[in-house]
Image (cartoon, rainbow, N blue to C red; front, side, top):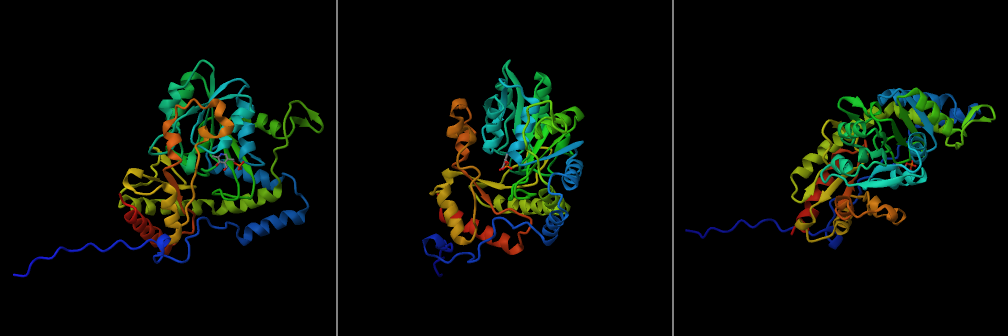
Length: 393
Ligand SMILES: Cc1ncc(COP(=O)(O)O)c(C=O)c1O
């Protein structure tokens, strides 16, 4: 009788970062250049018309974007930061406490400070990365007047929970949707919820115009107030009834926005398909978790953020990402430092948001855009498996 031999498992392929053969020598594009010929033509038409200031194309963008987001009024502005500043300026009294996410882009919080308010940091949830409504409820005080919540990475927060917290305590709510164009919640566009929803059209956003921003609101009086703040409080030519700013968009940007908006629903659907494909890949790899969407939310996946269980690997997140890059998969880290831990916000950090503070060591984003191909998914899947196996604890 021949002695049975053990079936040897195939040796782990040597990582490209250690001199092995990469899965692909052509990297998967992390993002996709977004301008098409028709966008450029739309901008040129405005330049040729000579009407460069905010006019018909900005108004068209306001109307169409608001309608597609489930909101009554849209107001274009110069960027996502000024959109927040306009919303906060119209809704939050200086001196108020405002509940803010500990895990977001800094503008959500820094503009609360710029509005003369006190940011009170709320932790995020481990599985969705979104602001935790239970922690928010614990942090309400008699001085709390508002909530500034981010629909982060393209995924809405638990809007039901935040709206009921707001109703219970009489709070105003601003949702920062800089990363969540056309996201939906409970079957409706996110513009249907809260007092104001703000957007960024920065170059890399799902709808990018270079720089640009927009707010949606449902209250006509609030829309008028925001329009005043946006343009030096001017009620008629050279009559200024409020202190305001110049935070206007221009029609070149408006035209690019309108042109790109035609494609946004299809591009959003492609991102959603890409996220489902990544979900299936990650379900089969120990130690990596796919992002979970909030119940009732339809996310639009501006960023697809993966979490590493570091106890299952012998490497750091940065080493894991360097190995992926060498195989042909570029990644990014959003964010390498939690907002709450930014030096500029140290005065408001009470060190009571442990999930947010620890996420910065454990997350990375995979390439995400509307033009990922079967070949790109193959490269990402093989690379993730190879790197996870090589560094498996
Ligand atoms: C969540 C969030 N809020 C606000 C902003 C600010 O937008 P902008 O860069 O257009 O000022 C960004 C931009 O990255 C963002 O991601």
